Length: 276
Ligand SMILES: C[S@@+](CC[C@H](N)C(=O)[O-])C[C@H]1O[C@@H](n2cnc3c(N)ncnc32)[C@H](O)[C@@H]1O
Image (tube, rainbow, N blue to C red; front, top):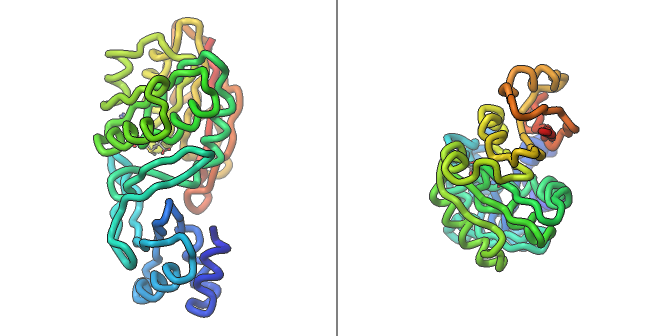
């Protein structure tokens, strides 16, 4: 990604200015999203012009704010090109309609989506608690054809797009979209059903571990819990502090991996828990 940005902006910005843009640059379909540091705000249209002219598939350039609120969305400002926030994004052979203004979506989780999909075994039931537009669910059930995925999200726009994306990828029989708070949806519909739980809400996943345990089959299963931790954090402490008492299960950490940098010395981790 940074290669595209470097070649588009070479000669437009100084190398130090360019490197300050790289970490906040994403391409989703034909939309370029740029986090522009304050020091470069005066040059935002110049930057947008260079991106639009220099990176072939780009039709729209938007300035992006930080991810905020319960729906984890970001404010975007139109800079140049076609005035739109909705686009088609392709990943691992699946197609997704994404509205970058109304829903959370990050192409940076692409490797993670493939890793999770490859962990699922035939016949599994997966509960994706914070599922957005359905990217993890769709890719999982495209790769592991003999599984069922419950795709929960509280954002009505994400839920509508998930329905569209499930249809677009012909997965109506295997991915079930559910609108609502994961905590309530699980208690109403999914108690004791799941072999695997996906919790991609790193700011808050740990607050829903009790609900994840409730969704697991009585025989147990796997929980993929994403969280943000500073460099050098002690994972045992994290589990000790956040794991609710689970009388029916013994819960252990199977593995934890760092899956991206999200700020200075702050990382996204995936902690894989096994409940038996
Ligand atoms: C970080 S995004 C992840 C989306 C998706 N898993 C992905 O990777 O594209 C978190 C999602 O959780 C949803 N969310 C937040 N709180 C929720 C809750 N209590 N129940 C269900 N969904 C929730 C947000 O609307 C958002 O779409």
